[in-house]
Image (cartoon, rainbow, N blue to C red; front, side):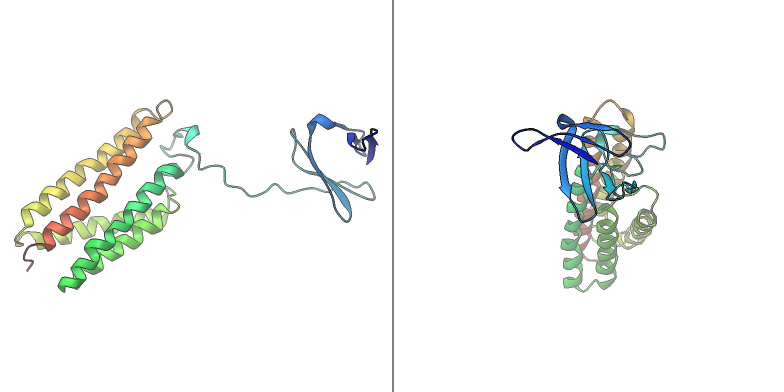
Length: 222
């Protein structure tokens, strides 16, 4: 690799062994290594040349660029494989921690079955929304647990003192979930606001679930 310098000892250009000229304006940085120079330009990946002028193939860095909200939904109805972009997913991951409150209260009251159900739901939700791949076993486990837990708690609420309030909040939460999906799919590539509406409705599902659990626990449960 040939180099050309000016009076100030700054590189004007680099000439590689294949006679390719890299102008100074294109060079972002140059790093001297033991057996080569590492040159990074605005048009290419890093280029390495050994002392014997043999080219070295440089593997591209393994960076996950898929999780990007600006690309919109793909043909599978996902954000490059994810349920929501990372910024919105963080909010749902955060509100998942609120399940600790009714779970702890149920344990305090001695309802170990309800407490166990809520804490398992908390673990599944946090585990999924930390990296919400659409087609993931974590998602299927989370959904399966939510549906089975809802059936069990509805059975308990049938004879509970505040069962009617549990059903009311659960119904509102069940309505919010399809609204979340509708907002996400309504303008898949043109409206960024639909992503936030979808996120808000999904967060309301969690809020209603917590209110339903507290309503059930505040009354007598058989």
